[in-house]
Length: 391
Image (cartoon, rainbow, N blue to C red; front, top):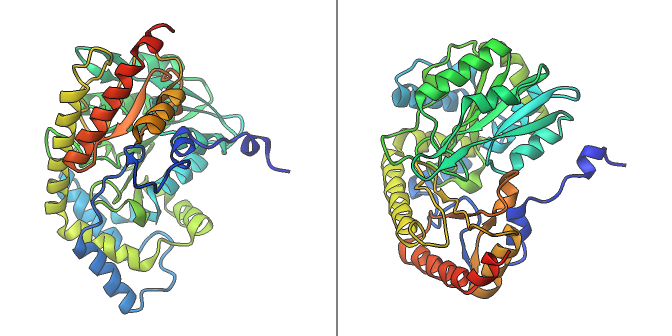
């Protein structure tokens, strides 16, 4: 028999919808968090060369030394810091890093917090630890957009709270946490002995500056902080499953043990591709950001002022999270859009409590393809307006 908390796990709402039509060429897929551009040539060539050179053996369980050195150089350059490379671990995917961070900090009898709306697999990672958890909801208003109220965090804390997950830039809302907000949250968690699990995988997808503020810029080496990042979003490497985490120095031995248990090591030839991305990928980052900014502008033009929707302009990441006032079932809505208009969306309910009137779309798509998808969404929404408003 399975453990009860494992047996209760359900497929998240994104795959629940997408698996019914995934791969269907008639569908414009805006449901997953990736664009339609393949990984750049020079990154793929680096992986091929590594294979040709025989990089097919086990690697260091915390990542090859040359990749950790490249990550250090990248972080130092980006944030003007001096990270000890021994604090860096490359276990495999960024989601694996999230799972490891949850396992490191939570267990039965303890309590965790998730800043929400959030990617649905985060609460699954919390659940399998056996801990209880609550969501602290970002607030929204038409003038300010999405933001986190620190008083809401304080109110949700318990004596047994040991971990707080925060994703900034945020999937799905596009919220970007400011440096002063990060300082205040870190001070609170330092005082209470709570580990911040900071998912910064969208760090380069911001539309004001070169990178989003990072907790690494403000934290001491031994602060209760695990920062998770990766290659998938910034360098169009979603299928490569390569990410990293930065932990306090005291965690080094445990990181090696857990990495070996979970994945042995990230594939050696893929790590070579990661080095190429970090050392030669700045033009790719800039090109992708320009594409995503154009996608955001298209979304705001079509959906941002539509009378049947509420939508704050995203500050980062590449998602829009519109609210349909009066909508009772986000799952029914996105299923309807898929069946009648062949556009794949993600239902709001799967991003945590309080999101039933929302849906998420990824705007990291080619221009005309995205524009056509938005026209179809509006067409469906306007056809259903009477039924939605009657609820």
